[in-house]
Structure formats: C-alpha cells, structure tokens
Image (cartoon, rainbow, N blue to C red; front, side):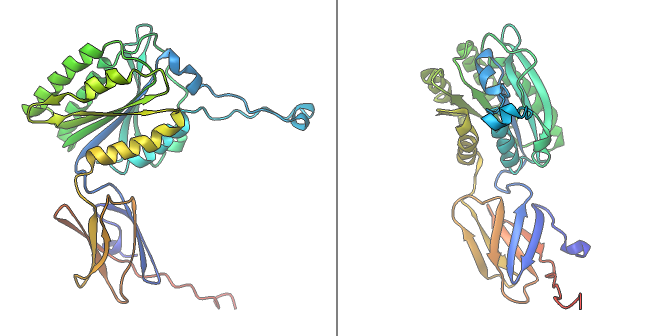
Length: 311
C-alpha cells in the first residue's frame, strides 16, 4: 500500500475485498475534540465487585490439587469494554481513568492515568488502594475540571465524564453548587462545553437524588447531567454506550459516496465504529460526509493471492 493509500484523518484501517470496503473509524467524526474520562466508585460498598474470586473446582480438580483459577472481578470487563468503545469517541483515543470516593472520608481521587482503548486488556482494575467510607463526588468533578483546563491547549473542544456509583451521594448539595460553578465557567468560555453521565448501580442508589442533580438546567447550556440506573454492574458498559451516544452524538448518521459522487451507503442513525459498504468496480476512493464535513479516503488496491504459487 502506497503512502497516499494509507488510512488518513478519521480512519485507522481500510480493507477491501471483491469490492467490499471495511473502514474502521479512528474516532467518531460527529464529536470533534471530545475529551472523555471514567470515574469508578471507590467506596467500600463496591468491595465485592472489585474482588477477584476463585473459580469453583469440581471433585476431580480438587483431588488432583489443580491450581485454583482466579476469575476476573465484575468491574474489570465492564471498564475494558467502556474504554474500547469510548476511545472511538475521544479526540486522541486516551481516556482519563480514576477511582473516586476513596480514602477514609471518601474525598480522595486515585487517578490511574490516561489509558488507551487499544491496550486496555493490559490494565487491571482491582479497586483503589484505600476504599472510602463516604461517597463524596465533588473532588472527582474538580479533578476532571482541572484536567479539562490542562487539555484545552492540546485541542480539547468539549468534555464528557462517566461517573459510576452504587450508593447515595453524601455531598449532593455541594455537587449542585459546583455544577453551577462549572456552568458559569462554560458560559464565560473558560471551560469547553462539558457533560456528565451518572450511572447508578444496584438497589442502594438514591435515584431521587440523582434526578435532582440531572434535571437542573443552566442558562445558555440547558442540561449538563444525565443519569440511568443499572440493576447489576454487568449492565453498566452497554448502558454507558447508549447514554454517551444520546448525549454526545450531534449528527444523525452519515453518507458514503464513491469517487463519482454516487451514494453507496446511508447511515440514518449514529455511525458505527466500523463502516462496511460496496463500491463499484474501478472505484479509487470514497467520501464520508458527516455534519456537512467531507472526509475522502483513497481505496487501497486489493491483494490477490495466487492459489498456484506453491506448484
């Protein structure tokens, strides 16, 4: 593949076979300059979800002293899935990941770092060093605001933080007050437009409290928060994906054209991470149009394999 045929701009991989094109998006072009973060509840009530429990052994495994297999905890696969998906939305594919509600008073934030969706399987999520006894959200909001301030010079144009909790907030009034401060910073152009996605897990969540926070509207902004409740931790990743799509996707799908300007595919809903479509024989390029912006990509030549090479 020559240099000019390599994936460019919003595409990370292009593959073509028998006129069928498979184009993988590097990032979602409907959310320009988005910087995302995930904050996982680090309070003591989450200890069971972070625990790596041994797998039950059958009788034969027991009498042969087969080593006990340690299963992944309930949180880890959910965070892995979210990171892989949300990295397609993030401007550079790196997401800030942290535990919140940590420490004795529940007011500490343990930042894991900026993690890549590509290398996500390398990361273990076994919980914070010190779980909190209270659930204090404002410190996490301040952490994300400070992070956004540092990223605006790097190209951040909007922010979105995913916050997962399984309990009742002990600083709900302070969260409301700090949300007003954030809204003021946004309208004054000192912060980019920011959204918060709050996901409650289990029966211990005070949904009325979350609704009060999320129903607030701010002058010139409207709603800044949204929330949903998941019955089990295993439902969190898919729920987050839906909420982020509803909150951040600003375009209703997109249209793919061949090199003659003919429509070859229309996505009426949101764009998937991988685009698959057919192009006519001899087509040299395709163009994806999203939100009035056009992104053109040269199509690489098909690789032909000769079955008689070994004879």
